Length: 324
Length: 249
Image 1 (spheres, rainbow over the protein chains, first blue to last red):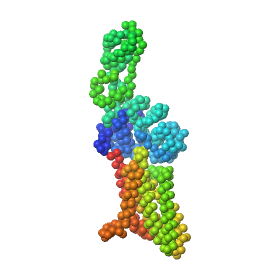
Image 2 (image 1 turned 135 degrees about the horizontal axis):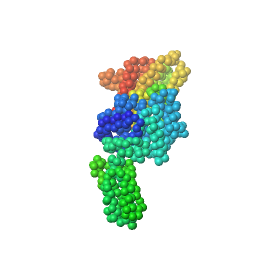
Image 3 (image 1 turned 90 degrees about the horizontal axis):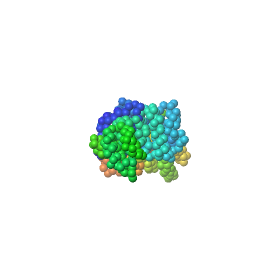
Image 4 (image 1 turned 90 degrees about the vertical axis):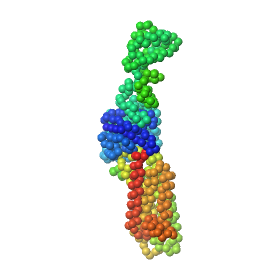
């Protein structure tokens, strides 16, 4: 559906926003486009939507070159720009009808399409209100409804939940999940939970380069050293540490004392769940136990690791930093 | 409805939701009305013909109106969309840059035309006030309006062009005014320049002389071609400016 090969964008003034970026999105996929602010997400999305042209490389949507076949590409593409700019003087229904018209929705389908997207995006109750009088959440929904109105195969949403309150975020997320059933979607965000909640796969961009592109569940394994188990038992720290050292595959151990209790954080070199082995060890020595847990690394931490300066160096020698 | 018609409709409608167009239309009609009243009283009393009146109205006070109206009317076209960011929404719809420029121009031109519409009422009044034995010639009136629309259209195109260069409405209108005022004042060169070569060279490009000719009922095909082609050229350059965002951004 989307083929980006060696895409480079240099702005006037010598800033290179995107350099040699290649990625691919298949039909039906929901891909998160992730990166810190200023990483080149919006630039890439603007190029995909045909608003600006690349300096180098090739961008194809549905097999069509976006620079040369812009109008054709945009007929099958719904795009929500970053700050969701709308005509504030128009009423919601009027705006969507105008956009449907502009996007070439045939007259006989126009009314049903507009009604459909208004229902999908929860806009029916505000159809007669001026866009300028709507809250940010509603405006964002109008923007998404606009992106959807010509029933495109591909949706490109640039930061669809930015500036919304938690309830609104949840509503937009549900909407995106609903849309994911019959659309190919590319969503950008710098908020990880956002991507985690809606996407199958993530493309991480940092300083204009792609540093990761993989299914979400593989991301953790690639960016963390291994599983982390926390155990808290009534035993002196030195003894606990000495015994735990016997465990196979242990890379680092950190202990802390709380009265007669000792808390140890164990980091392993692989992703096996070692809770059972730890428990057997505790039982063998007859210590009292008050906590035993496996820590699941969040995508948040993976992201911090990936976009940290010198991220590639970190990948080769991760031991010291992961437990920090 | 075609994309151009859709865009055009939106463009025209956008003028009616902002107070600028109403204020401008009011000012325009006040200026034209006072001018008309003044001219018709003074001139008719002094025994001038209705043709002198037409020339005074279009070649005189009409200029004031054109110079005032065109920069303000055209300033919004692109500058406003750039300022609010809606240009991105607009241009990422399946439309061509050329269609957008054409619709913006036709939209502002339509509003300009609507503004002139009430001035048609002057002519029945004029023919009743006048005791001239010669009836008012509808051809001459049509020719005068042709001049108003050709010259005004060109100025509006300049305005749309200036508007595409900035996201500031004030900058857009002032730069448009600077350009059209320069062209207007340059139009006096054939009459005032002491150098014969300058007089000769500037004569075919003088909007002032063109308007006087149109108001006299004389349609000079050179002037018509000049305004139509200049308008087209300026709009083509505007399309290029709009396209340049792709490379400069």
